[in-house]
Image 1 (tube, helix red, strand yellow):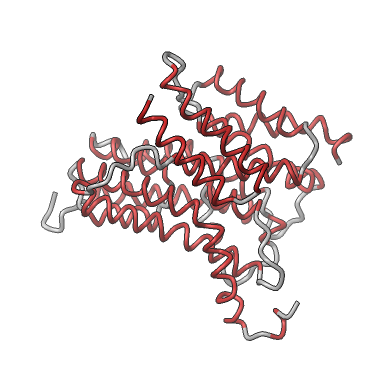
Image 2 (image 1 turned 45 degrees about the vertical axis):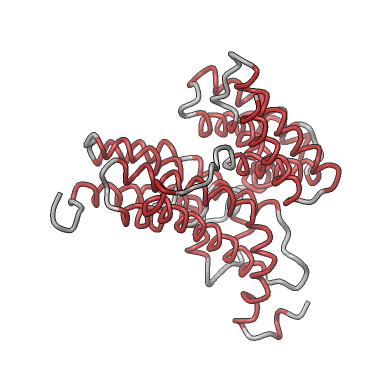
Length: 110
Length: 235
């Protein structure tokens, strides 16, 4: 490591990561900049968000262990609490703060 | 609707309040996870400002966490690039479903595309900005606020993460909670069961096929393949 506290390897790696990430995010916009998206994309635009939210919710639990109740109960119980709070009051902040508080309590007391 | 008669700067000011309220869940999650990232990075002997640089120009949480370990052992740049692609390939699908929503955007479009994380995507596809608020300004304000939380968290973690006095363990559940809230909102809008069933089955298949590591992209690709046969009944 040089006097600046960094070397060209780290800098190069970070720049490569930045380029790859923005390329992933920009691909569909660049691809469809000139051409009209096919009809199927209209259909997908409507149904991709609910599918992605489902995958992201389930994915949040992908490393949950079921070995002991304390491994899975806090996350699952707090998750249902968030959904229940939100169906009841439909107040985003209340749902998130309530569920997160419950989770933080459960992982400490269980 | 009075947005057309207002000077162009007005929209972003009026958008700030609603955007801030929409972004508060991300504030909780990004600040705390950002702190964890910054702390981890300096513990692996990188300078504190690298945390800020990464959060400013890469801005992809999972990839940044992955990079800490890879950089520490001197993984080749090509390999890091490939792994970053594998982790972030799902964002190509996110853009696909935002083509229409971002089509009218001009001034901030490049930034909106750059800053498209899971959480920002969730908020932008689910939250409807209040009547009279310029949509593009709202999207841009949410995106910029979210990234500012991530950068500030990373800087805090890198600089003072080791001496923070409070036990914040578990507060990152706020991001899971955000996804659950956004899913409930999606269910209110899209009332057909097919997309949720398809995505759940797809996630289960992906978990069996590839395990937790590359779950998201595989689950999303299977979901898209799985929803295609329903085109006739859903359209």
